[in-house]
Amino acid sequence: QCKAKLTGPIETTQCDYETLESVISPLHTSLHSLARTSFFKHLKIDLLRECPFWESNGFCVLRDCAVTTVDEQDIPPKWRAECLGRLNRPPQDELRKSFPGCYYRDSDFCVLDDEESKGGEYVDLTLNPERFTGYAGSAANSVWAAIYQENCFGLSEADLRSTMEEGDIDQDLLTTSSHGISPADLSSLVLSPLAKQAHDAEKDLCLEKKVYYRIISGLHASISTQLCFHNLDQRTGEWKPSLQCFTDRVASHPERLQYMYFNTVLLLRAISRAERYLSAYDFNTGGVQDENASTTRLVREVIDRAKVVGQFDETQLFQGEAKTLKEEFKAHFRNVTRIMDCVGCDKCRLWGKIQTSGVGTALKILFELDDAAFDPVANPNLLLRSEVVTLFNTLHQFSESLMAVDEFRLIWAQNEESS
Ligand code: FAD
Image 1 (cartoon, protein in one colour):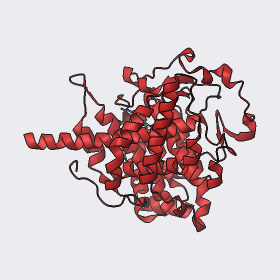
Image 2: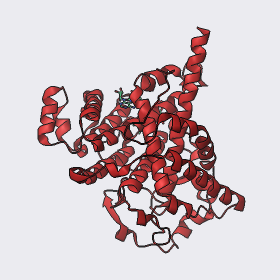
Image 3: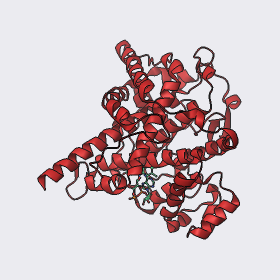
Image 4: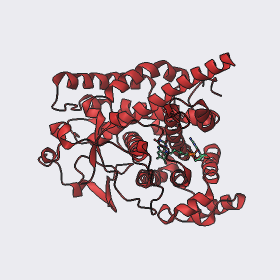
């Protein structure tokens, strides 16, 4: 499975694997440099919010779970709290709805932290790479189970009952909203029946649910790829790729690999659609002039590649009867972003929040805004800085994963030769 290259169209997109593969290396080079610029590597994020769904457990005690934060003095002066306080923005209440302890705007698919929120600390993402942390067991499995459960939107009571009659899915769990889930319910359930149910939806149900499942499964696969590539050999203490880990978690399920490509195309399409707005965006950090110019140039490079391979037709979704699914889709995706506060390992929580926010921003760009909205003069505050930062960083993480897949193919070929 490691050897096989995927070929042909990436399902439900207008792009094929070969086209994406042909640009992934130069795209990754641009994104990798972009992720190291001052604008994109600094993000204010609140990692201390309480899990809104159950009492969090399983906090990770390994050193690799910890996040290194930066002192406010070390971030560009423009974003320091006292300067943001002086900005002339519409009052938060006009824009925001609230969940307990967090906020969203009606157009948002995710619950966001932004620079003006009270809590949170600045993080330099380059000092906190996504990699193996040792966060595992029932705590981690429960979070994934809760995330997959959010794919059950749009199912009627009758659908649920018939699904339950067919399989051994915990009745209480399926009929309770996420707010009522306890970790014990989730771990006793084990993930597979829900993941299976969601996967069956992939075959039988509507396009919207397929897309939802692909997004989540692709994100899960990308996280798995990162932790298998930047893996700690616990016998030798050496950091190196683990082919076995990648084979077990991703390569032996080819559809998971496909969904990583799917997410990449979705993110590229969002960037391409928002070209007008992003081209005029101010990436100035008030720092070194050269760096500001190179950030703008790198964003341009990514947009230009996105225009070639970001071939996803968002107009196929939420049409006709499926229009009613959009609000549910949005509400469930928001729940996924809130579930991130239940992740008991800070570094995993950091990247979980970034990537669900990045995908949420892409969904907002694709499904919530019309073309006129991208006019940067009429709509200068369309996207928060945190939305722009997470959108590009998420694409960077997916491009890292696709590059890692290539490395795993090489390692596999070398192992074959030597055996
Ligand atoms: P899990 O990955 O926990 O998966 C549970 C079950 O889900 C599997 O048994 C399988 O049935 C199903 N499944 C697995 N992958 C897929 C897929 N792609 N699509 C559909 N179904 C699938 N660990 C780290 O070391 N570093 C990190 O940065 C990190 N980040 C995380 C971020 C989040 C948001 C979460 C919830 C967990 C994170 N973890 C991280 C933990 C990691 O994802 C695993 O949960 C952990 O390694 C235990 O793996 P597992 O083998 O038990 O299976």
